[in-house]
Structure formats: structure tokens, C-alpha cells
Length: 256
Ligand code: CDP
Image (cartoon, rainbow, N blue to C red):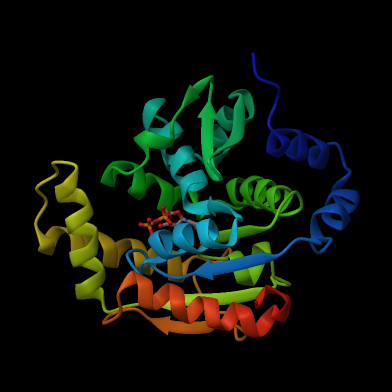
């Protein structure tokens, strides 16, 4: 049986009244390079972040996959989304472990690698709902900080530069028009045999965006220090080139 995940241990420790110690440990800035990439769904974060991580030899962390994994668990256990306490309880009982394969995060729940089961619309909806729950966010944030304290990372999500790593080495905020974001997501879905229409994709995306922006805990907002990139008319290569030139400016040692 895999050992208990750090998030669960952390959560228990917190419940035992060691909150102050927990906050202190988890707020320590990382000594590693943290490249934070935030933005709404379909802005092109994943492809650009993966390519960037590969070029720099950093670990690539898709924080959304962790929220999706909780969404997957909720779905698999048929837990009601209106009962955050039941969801947290289930998370506490479920052995979770995180591994890296070729520099990319893999998520294991109850001994099963769930990484390839996270892209369905049902899981995305559940992920967005559990992402509004402070207890779930606390557990995932602690895990993400732990990962960022172990190695140089390119980490993407909604709150990486604002909440998870406010002291990130460099921050990017990617955005694009809703129509283009919808087209990109639809293409991804068609590639795996899902024939959803553009209208349906755009509608689901807009609903999820507004839930992500409106929630009270760690909403999707742009950090004032983030470099904004509007990817509407850019190729992935162009986005990566813009990021690399900003990174070279921020980390002059990378040059040459
Ligand atoms: O791939 P896509 O951009 O559609 O979504 P994702 O990055 O896989 O994230 C799925 C959901 O997790 C989002 O809709 C957010 O609600 C939530 N999330 C979050 O709240 N904070 C993060 N750092 C990452 C994701």
C-alpha cells in the first residue's frame, strides 16, 4: 500500500493544531527556479509549458491535473459535489502518490495511475467545482509547494503566480479569445474521438471560466508582475520564443 500523501499528512497535522508551523514551512520561498504560467482553459498553457520545460530541462507540473484527479475521484466514488466534507474525507482515506515520468507529473490514486483518465468534460466540471473548496485547495497547494521545493519547475494553472508561488522566478499569464480557445479544445477532443460541437465546447469553457474567476478562494486573476501573452494569433513556437526571451532577461545565466 503506498504511503500517505504529503497533502493528507499535512492536512492531519493542521487538524492537530500545528497550523502555524505548517504555514511557516509552506510559505518558505523555494530556492529552485519556478516558472509560473497561469491563464484560462485553452489559452495554450499546457503545450507551451511542456515544451518550455523540455527545453530548459525542468520538471513540468500541470496543477490542473491535480484538481482533475480529485474531480475523477468524486466521479468514481459518485460523491455529491454539495458535500465538501465528504469529499475531503474521501481524499483523506485515499492513498495518493505523485511520480515523475520523463519529467512529467503522474498522479496515482488508490494504486491506479489516473493521469490518462482526466481529460473528460465530466471530470473537468467536477474539477472546477472541487477547486472552489478551501480544504481541497489547501491540500493541493501544499503538494505543489513541496514539488517546487525539490526541483526547478515549469508549473501551470490558475493561481500559481498569485497563491502557490507568489515569489516565482518569473510569471506568465496566457490568454486568447474565447472562440479560439474553444476551437483548440474542440480539436483536442476530436483527436480522441469526441465529436462535441464548437458551440458546446465554448459554452462549457465559458461556464468553467466564470466559475474559476468568480470563486472566493484563489480565483483566476492575473498577477501584476506576470508577463501577459495573448496567444490568439500565435503559434506554440512563437509563444515559447517570447517566454524564452523573458526568461533570459530574468535569468541572465541561462544565456550562452
Ligand atoms: O486544461 P484546462 O485549462 O481546461 O483545465 P485544467 O488546467 O486541467 O484545470 C481544471 C480545473 O482545475 C480548472 O477549471 C480550475 O477550476 C481548476 N484549477 C485551479 O483551480 N487551480 C489551478 N492551479 C489549476 C486548475
